[in-house]
Amino acid sequence: MTAAKIKLRINVQGKVQGVGFRYMTKVLADELKVTGGVWNEMDGSVTIEAIGDYPTLAKFIEKVKASPSPFGKVTHTTINKDCTIKDSQNFSIRN
Image 1 (cartoon, rainbow, N blue to C red):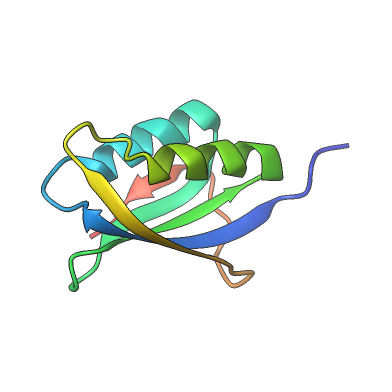
Image 2: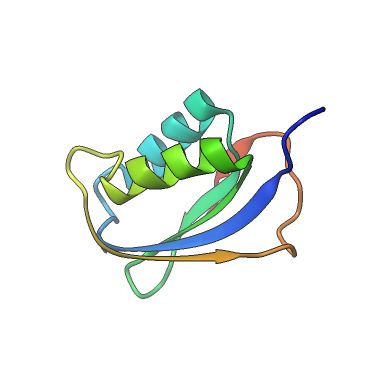
C-alpha cells in the first residue's frame, strides 16, 4: 500500500527571483521524488505545486523555507492544500 498523495500550493516570498530558486527547487523536488511545478509570479514571489506523501512534503517544505538556492532568502511562505492541482509524472519549471 502506498502513502496517500497530498497536493500543496506553496507561495514563497523574499529574494526568490533571479537567484536560481526555481532551478534549485526542481533539483530538490527531483531528489525527493516530489512532482508538480514551480514558476515566478508577477509580484516577485514564486509559486510551487508539490505532490507527494506527507513525510516527503514535510522535508521538501523545510528545505524550501531554508531556500534551496544559496543566493535566495525566503521571508514568508503560504501553504495550502489544493486538490485541484493536476497529477504529474515529474517536476517542471514553468513560465
